[in-house]
Length: 274
Image (cartoon, rainbow, N blue to C red; front, side, top):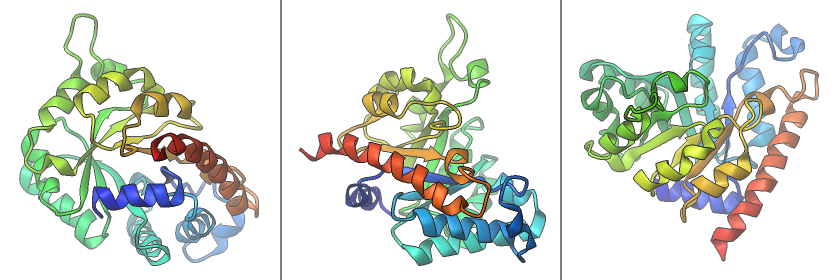
């Protein structure tokens, strides 16, 4: 999917919501545990209930790898099902990969070719030759970790007093990578006060913003400081949507939370439509 196609879907659905499919067998309704593939059955129900309210889905790969081959099969089935429901849904493998070049090339093939994701999250620590193999895939997107939502981000990413802020170096350096137009960046909603500086470095790239909802990030602040003329935001919510209910009405409860977020997003999009 091209960036422009993603933008078109955002304005069509009046939503820039990404639903994180961090499916945990310890949290899903117990009646699903009796099915042959409870991860997939849970995901399918969530997708059926929310696909008209969002533009993207983001399975966190760890929640699938933890269950071995069965989990990997569920991830593949989930990826395929999303595209069968709506081929214009944007799919993100939240894998946080990043290794030497030939290894990164294999990771890229796994997620872009075998699993057919539109994007994959990548760690930048090993530099250019660990990132560029992902960027060679046409109309696929590499989402580089820049400033994450967790508390530990302050250990390195923002730097100590008097130090260069590492997240700024990541943003600035990566702009020089081959096919950098295929880059997006992870910026946590809990770090909204940094968005002004981030937009001064990457004014036109999309930002994937986790942390709205269960982690306490503010949608209002993210939109105020992070939105550009092409929207430029994918706001991810995982636990707040997935586990709105752990009873038989879990899908309906997920749709209600997603619908509330979509309605807020629609109001913000009105400012760009004028």
